[in-house]
Length: 230
Image 1 (cartoon, rainbow, N blue to C red):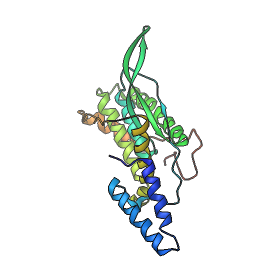
Image 2 (image 1 turned 120 degrees about the vertical axis):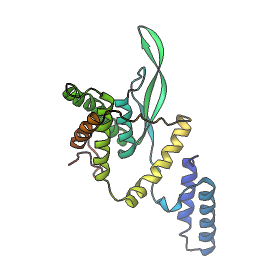
Image 3 (image 1 turned 180 degrees about the vertical axis):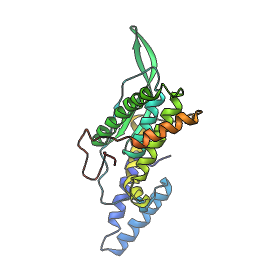
Image 4 (image 1 turned 135 degrees about the vertical axis):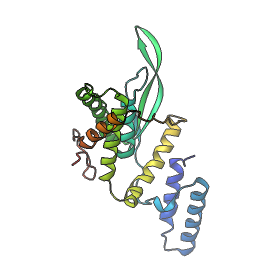
């Protein structure tokens, strides 16, 4: 179970107090910070005591009868590389005037990160479909093709990432904050895996196309966050 955001902030406050010129106060503050961190399984070395807690929110996609694999693959990309947490939720949509149960995605993150992630998500959903239409005359297994595209794009993005230690330092505290936000505003979640592709030729063709995919910068990203991929 993830630590609530208020616990993380208490630990950070204690770490700041641990810099006190008063040795007794500094020692007590550090002891209490380490105690809280151990109780709530928080990695102290991954926290920046001077960083302000991110202001989190969430934004929902449209409700559908079910979220197809194109949308699920696109959501995985945004979670892994674009600083958001997409959560699948039950939703009600209307069919012929009657309410029906369905699914929607809630993207959790800061407002600016969600804006970028939603752009990437919708672009990829359209792009998966567009690329399949170009190849479906020669290939027959759409799922394997899209799965391959996902793998190709995923590895391309991973190749362009900063070193693991730098990535961990940037992402750990945000992930803890999002865990607390989801627990408070959305509730319990569960994970669902994707089926393995069955058609090797379609998967390989999709992988090559995924490696060739360029995500264009249609929204203004922060200076340290790059969307366009070489």
